[in-house]
Length: 278
Image (cartoon, helix red, strand yellow):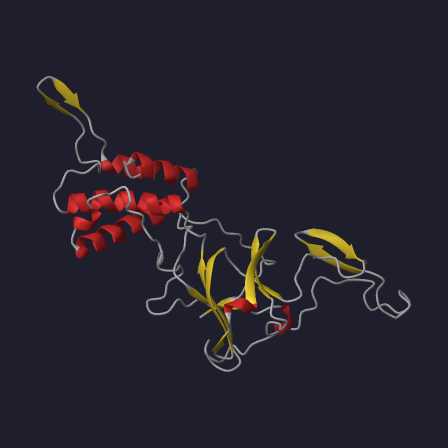
């Protein structure tokens, strides 16, 4: 089983979004608020939107240490007639059977049968951004690798002519000799619409913080004054729907999390590639 350690106060999940820039272009009074008001409003808005969107965008970086079949001596999905004398002229198999996404295939073509790059490492989750890659404690130049996607799985591909270590020493720390560490942000990159939604939400929170009129729903079911009936939304009812009560912000939330999921979907399988976090 993989060991997960996200550092001080480690939990089973990264501690929320770390890089969620906000766009306050639609908030002309934003610069008039004190820095501490801006910071508190931004922190609250981002935390709420992160939860309402299923924690799918730009989570905090984690240190991932890959370990593949070569580390434990596995031979992959190979079966008869592998190694059967006389099956091919060279004494080896005339084709190699393997399992591809649950489908049995026979590889017998020149140059290989897969879409795999010459040197690549799969990620265990989606990837918003790769922060750093270190081998033997030395950080690799970002030009030496790229992030691809194959069958929905992100892959870190080596492009400088070298290859990733086939094994590493899990007894040493992530920055020591013999270690191979990928620091990346799980999740999806935050779109511009999310930055705008966070900016609008933070703007209304800042207004409420200084006692100005804001568009946030209040604890008022109905009110009659001068023959006019007014009914406002109960924030608890809005929260139960996974919304904020702000029309534009809620439209974006619905567009990226229409099923109101509490977190990103996961697949648990004995065939799923697993690594180690430290």
